[in-house]
Length: 390
Ligand code: APR
Ligand code: PHB
Image (cartoon, rainbow, N blue to C red; front, side):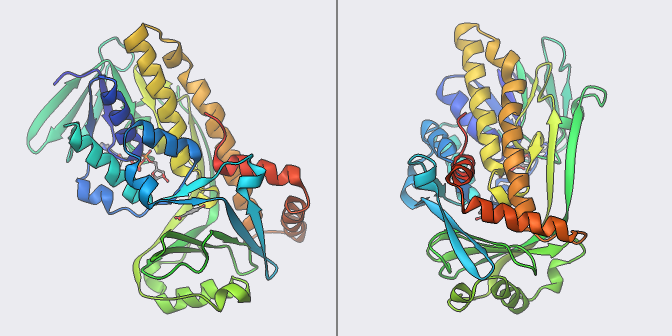
């Protein structure tokens, strides 16, 4: 098989780039290890920056997001038994975020690929990347017993943190930066009316909690748990009791509980791999960087990678201009690190740390006190949360 751009990974990053390139007549193929059903079974976050929403519309995939997604102009931080609202609309100069589940977004991307007869190959086993530093890279993979080959101009590594692409860059070339947090998030999805029309990030001495939603009949909640916890140790009842303990009484009293339809524990890490390019290979999304979900930056960090790569490919194929490709890694990393900083800051401010000394606890309290006493601090939070410019 021959194509211009071979994209490894059929998650949101890979599918969005595939769709954008196809709309401009730039031939591409997506190689996805799992089945579509498996990819769509993953429960992920649900806050889209303004820029991501615009990119989905540009990719002609934004119709259901605009119909079913919710525009949110603020969220709450609960602490010390009280609720303080972060007015995103006011402090970001009129912007907002869209609350729309990543699973649904990925479904929309798959359906758009189908409408355009896009080539998304599932069950692509044992993907290997070859000749990345030459002019004629190629990718091999197994489909059943058959060994297949894709000759291409460029390879996009959109295969997530555990993918093969980043690992195809020689160790001596790649620099990795990582911070692992001493806790995880236990998440529950339930067909219940959300406790709040806007998200609530809760700082509590028992641990962090988050009240989010997917729609007015589908709630998404999280509580911070020790890394040693196992999801099977948590009954629904125990989860609801602990969640309510961490919320102000005015909120916990009106909590509507119900059976969990999904329950899982995810570890938290901050991670960046540099550079995001090696020869004809370009990394995008989770393949290159991971953030703790506290700042809702995961998918949104991928969006700017895709935006830069898309325009770089347009420059190459339509204008013979390689400046976008040559500048991609530096440009993408500049914004990635700002998302890393914001996600780290939100995580450090709102979670309890097992080895935290009293001085650190006072700093956390002061961070919150400063935030709600300073318009400049609120503007800083708001501009990061709605999304820094691409
Ligand atoms: N070969 C082919 N496909 C692979 C391989 C491989 N060796 N390894 C992984 N994949 C596929 C995975 O099955 C997955 O569908 O690559 C895809 C990567 O998708 P994501 O992990 O969702 O990464 P990305 O598309 O960058 O989306 C980032 O997803 O994990 C969340 O918080 C993250 O919201 C962020 C978003
Ligand atoms: C979610 O709805 O899953 C969600 C929302 C905001 C976050 C993290 C997760 O910061």
